[in-house]
Length: 221
Image (tube, rainbow, N blue to C red):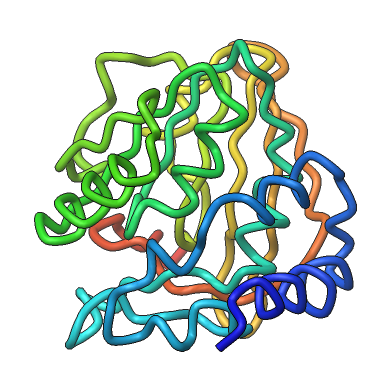
C-alpha cells in the first residue's frame, strides 16, 4: 500500500467533501500518522471511511471514529493554543494527538485499561508531550483540572450531561454528537453565563456511544 497516496485520498475524497476546509486541520491530518494509532490487526483499514474496532470483541463497542468525523469535530472545536481541553473517550489516542497539536494541554479520559495503555504508548511514540491520558470513568466524577476551555466527546451521548457541562468555563464550549438513532447531531454548546448556553447543530451523523453514561428517562410526569 502506498501510505502517502492513501492519506492523500482520505483527505481529499472523504474529509474535504465533509466541509473540512481549515488549512491548519488539513495540514495536521497530512502529518500525524493515523496508521500508527490503528490496532495492528486493522492497519489495512487506517484510511478507510469507517469506524475501526479497537480490540477483539470491540472493547465494549469502542471504536476509532471515521476520519471525516474526527476531522469535522476538530475543525468545529476551533481550539486555540492557550486552551485546556478535556477529551472524553481517548480510545487509541489519535484524536487526542490531533487535539494536542492545537491546545496548550489535553486531559484525555478513558475507562478501558487496555485502551489507556494503547493511547499512552501511541502518544509517546508520536512525541506528544502535552496530553495526559487517565484511566477514569468520566461519567462518575468531575475532574480536578476543571474548568476547561473545551470539552470534546469521543463518542455519542443522548444529551450533554450536567457533569460535563459543569466543567466548561464561561466562554468555553462542549463539542460532541448528541441524540439517538436514527437522528444524532454534532452539537457545539457554548457557555454564555453560569446558567445559560447557546448551541448549534451543524451536521448529522451516527457514532458509537460513550460507555457508562446513564440514559435519560423516556418518561415525563
